[in-house]
Image (cartoon, rainbow, N blue to C red; front, side):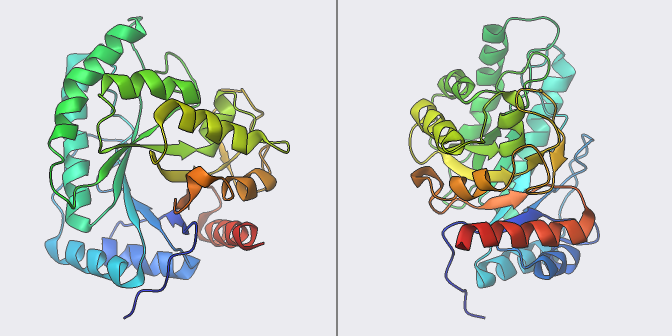
Length: 290
């Protein structure tokens, strides 16, 4: 099968893979007409680090390459390198290392990890020092050409979040020496909830300008395209279908015209099941191509 040319912004979805990456995940992606995919390689709400199925891994990797579909891994939600609990930090190290190694095995381009929070009332600088001590060695293990990028995803700003506004990526990148394998996954719902108003004639572009100003060009590797059930600045991570929330359709169209998003895939994590996912992928493609 000959790979088709990539659109400016491949559009896809986080897909279910219980039962097999290739056997279950890719047929789901095909039904959505997805041009990019994101998967879990472990229980997202647990610490287990399961081994993969080499046959499924190879079939998935080869099929994605043949169809020119970029793939990404989302690391488990429990990971928090800013935790004051040593057991949590140790498990975070092993969980993220597992996601990075599994990503390489399946040919994924990046691993998305939430930036975490400074728990236990500790100071942000103390938490970021711990991020450096425990996460930087994992980045330094990425020394193969086919290793994935580690993509930092900011939060909606709940609690003692280490990274929610675009400028918060600055101290995080500094803590990790702006490692060459470090990138950003921008979640539209999260940044909107954190206080960046993506609406209006220039909202999306201004937000992207701030991000590039903070981390430099070429660091944005993936966009989680999610509308928001809540208003800007609500600090609530509640996703809505594209155009069905307080962000609306226009900011997604605008995102796909900014120089920083050239070649960057958009992956939805919206509610609505398969029917809703199919509609959201189609809606984003229409906005991209209009």
